[in-house]
Image 1 (cartoon, rainbow, N blue to C red):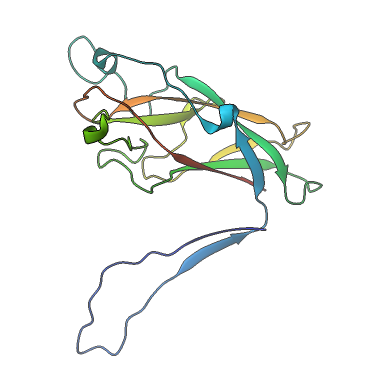
Image 2 (image 1 turned 120 degrees about the horizontal axis):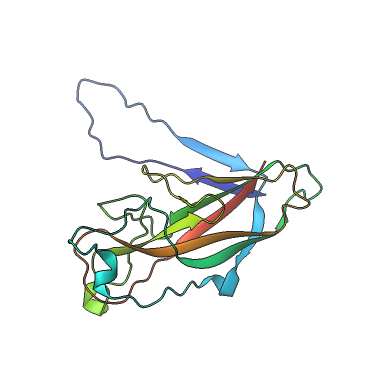
Amino acid sequence: MGMTGGLCIASCFADGNNEGLDVTLQANIVENTCQISLSDNGTVHLPIVSRSWFYNNDGPPRLQPDDAASGTLFSVNVESCSGDGATVNTMTFSFQPQNGIWPAESQQVFINETPATAGGAENVGIVIFSSRDNRNVVNSDGSSAVAFDVSKAESYLTSYDFYARYQSTGTVSAGKVTSHVLVDAIYN
């Protein structure tokens, strides 16, 4: 059984005239989780590019976070799911930054975790797209749900293709780019 849950805690203060505070907690408990693996043991190597790759000849950024462009292909392999004998209609993947941090400029870009002091590039992150529909796997609000209709597929236990590329979030400086991304697979 797999469980996912979330708790949102915000700073607050108590008003001396009130007796208590209302708190809302939300969680999901799901049984329909899957065992997945990633191609190349989960490492995606992007090519070396120059700073000029990020810009048009007249200066503005060449690509926005939701612009489909070629990238480095990788696969998410669904190996088994609890209740494998069940009828499956949809396989849904979600992608989130492992450290939970988005760049201030965009919640569709996975942040570069290598600091500039350790040789990291500044104002560069990674975007991931579904190869099926060339859509960024993360919505502009930071939510992620990439659904594949598998109701007519021979098997949903297969490989699903995605690709990753660099994305500028400001004026790019040269250096190393590293992002760690969590991938979840849920079937319905």
